[in-house]
Amino acid sequence: MKNAIQSILERYGFDRTRLLDMLRDVDSAFGHLPEEALPLLEAGLGLSRADIRETASFYHFFHQEPTGKHRIYLSNSVVAKMNGFHAVRAALERETGVRFGQTDPRPGLFSLFETACIGLSDQEPAMLIDHVAFTRLRPGKVADIIAQLRQGRSPDEIANPTGLPDNDVAYVDALVESNIRTKGPVFFRGKTDFRALLEQCLSTRPEQVAHTIQKSGLRGRGGAGFLIGLKWSLCRGSPDEPKYIICNADEGEPGTFKDRALLTRSPREVFMGMVIAAYAIGCRQGIVYLRAEYTYLANYLNEQLRALEREGLLGRDIGGRKGFDFSIRIQLGAGAYVCGEESALIESCEGKRGTPRVKPPFPVQYGYLGKPTIVNNVETLASVTRIMAEGADWFKSLGTAGSAGTRLLCVSGDCGKPGIYEVEWGIALNEVLAMVDAKSAHAVQVSGPSGECVSAEKDGARKIAFEDLACNGAITIFNRERDLLEIVKEHMQFFVDESCGICVPCRVGNVALLEKIQRVIDGKACQNDLDDMVRWGGIIRKTSRCGLGGSSPKPILTTLEKFPEIYRRKLVEQDGPLLPSFDVQAAVAGYAQTKKDLEREVEA
Image (cartoon, rainbow, N blue to C red):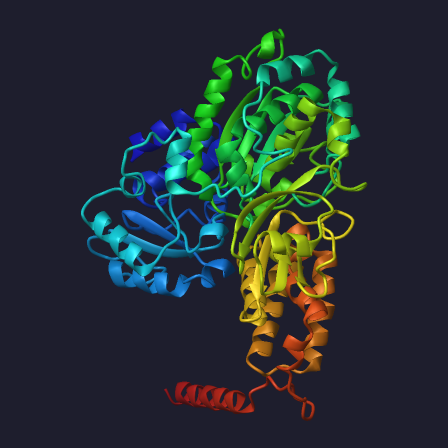
């Protein structure tokens, strides 16, 4: 083990900020993170063992106990459960002989785990086996996959039977459909003359590039909607050096998968957006933070980066401009939804647990390694490339006055045509529903669990725009056959599982809300419980440290507003001072048992 750990340390230059990469390599080499590896990492990195444990224990895809040769992660998203999840789950247990959360003791071939949305909501049920994606699962397909694994075939050989190289887009296509339904005017436009585009940018001053982006009205596509040109100018104006750019490719919001499609079909547009940003703010180093669920994209993306270096569009003296040096590396995550928040993502890039920072200071002032940092998401950076190619006025002519350009929508759920759609901001919700063949839509979850659940009938005229429904890209459709209360419960469970736990309102409050929604489902809630949920939800949103807690009560609050009848028909009258949920018999039985136990101890 000592030699293996030494080799891993050397691979990353004993750089403590690369702890996530080192832990991934150790976990892969030994099937878990053995206790004996910790002192070796401690000595090599100059970190305390507590620091290493703190990071290792935070991420879902690291394991402290030995696991099987093949780790199987089945997506347990709401959309998966609408499309045969339970049958697939049962088939996995039956075919492997393993229960979920366990490993078969002999021969130690399989470990089964459930995991949150893996960015494949348009082709659920889906799972990852050793980071290889398998989609559109059915029990028969599961049986075939497990049989082949038992015969000694690797997941990659099963998913990619023709042996396509994993650094080619054809390999990614063999695993996952891009599922792009509409193209243009901004995205998926085909070939772009990146050299000519770069020459055009380099012919102007850096501050003019930032001004062009600001003039275009481009707002961040990650959810907050901050003006990108202003963010760049603030970072450029900071006197501190060096500066950093991070591409946020950690789209963990359930129902979102647009970044997956962009990184598959248009990776160079994303990377060139980073190069343009680097020129605008004066930056030499960029990082793409790629969620662990997209590991199957990593080698392909690295090959695209190498190709850009060979073409002189990345690396040293970019575009022939002496001194314009900029490099990009890919940082794989390890499974943590909260790392989609920019400051938590920065902490993770530094090799720490993904704990959101208190703001201010903001990343443009104090970001990666304490230096000024721009964090933009994948769709934002791809938009930058198109704006510089077509002009700020062209981009601003699209969309609405307050929402310039277009928006990629990830549509899934009860519709005939799930997938990726490019629409101009300002499109009405009912236009989207018609476009995706959602003939019996009842409720629409806009922006995933952290967004709004709206009525397809009453809110159909509302606009997808920052001024109205500020959609982050996810559109999940539910018909009248779906139990919205169960969906709310699933979404609340997701937030409970994904909270970083650093602040009490989020860590404790969401558990309390989950218990309340279960009380409603069980028919044991009264009006007082609903009042509690509204009051507590408001407190959690106002007092939590980051955006996760700021939006986690919304599955309850927005459905209470739009679909109050689903709650009211479950309510019971409060009879006397005790809440309907209070089980007198259980309480008395518990008291009686405690009394017996105490009497037994006294007699002994």
